[in-house]
Every structure is written in C-alpha cells, then in structure tokens.
Amino acid sequence: MPWIVLVVSAVLEAVWATALGRSEGLLMLAPSVVFVVGLAASMLTLGWVTRHIPISTAYAIWAGLGAAFTVTWSMLTGGEAVTVVRVLLLAGIVGSVVGLKLLKSGPTTSQAAVVAEGAAGGDETGAAEEAAGRRPRR
Image (tube, rainbow, N blue to C red; front, side, top):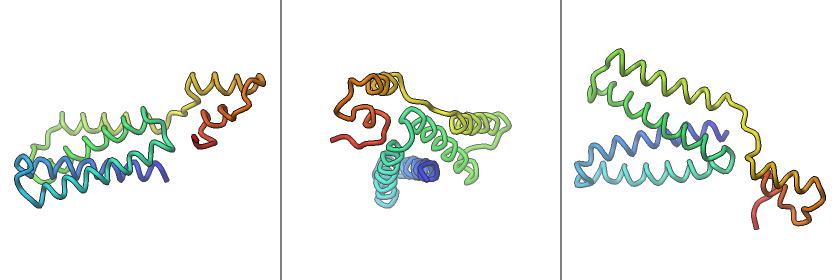
C-alpha cells in the first residue's frame, strides 16, 4: 500500500506543478487553488509514506516520478515537443525509480548499532525496537 500511495503522491506533485505553471505567478484563482490543494495533498501523502519507506528512497521516487509525470503531461497536452531524447530521458527516470523499488533496504548503520547493543543486553528501554521501526517513539 505505501508504494501505491507514493505513486499517487507523485501524481499530485505533477498536478500542483502544472497548476503552478498555469497560475501566472499565483495570480489566477482556480489554478492557484489547485496548486495549494495539490501541494498539501502531495506533502501529506509523502509524509505518510515516509513512515513505511525510508525517506531517501521515498523522496527520490516521489521527485523522479513527479517530474516524469509533469513532463509527460506537458508533452501530451502540447506544452512541450515530443522528442526521442526527451522520451529516452523520461525512460531513464522511470528505470531508476523501478531500480530503487527493487532494491532491498536493510537497517541503517545507526539502527544496526542500536539493535546490536540491545542484543548485547544493554538495551532496557526498547530503543532497538524503536530504531527498527517496530515501536513508535514516545
């Protein structure tokens, strides 16, 4: 589910970016409202996703897909020319996103250290569970 929400968040990024471009510097009311609502929804969904996917991966995918969706929309609506180079570069972005999705991420160095400390008996507060994401912070 977090991956689906991440893609939705990237679509919302494309929505607010497109609306910003059409708002004439936030002077046009309707595109400005779409911009603000899209931006808020995109940030809220990205924030939720980061509870399930590491921020480094989530942000890279969000930014990459959002940019690819924005450029694709612009090409489909005639705002930008469709060129072989542009399509190949977009394919590179999408390929990079797929690669990040397929990578298995292990615990960070700090998480591994806390877990190791807990295994050694030095963790009575549950910091290992917190660092591993199994227990919410207090």
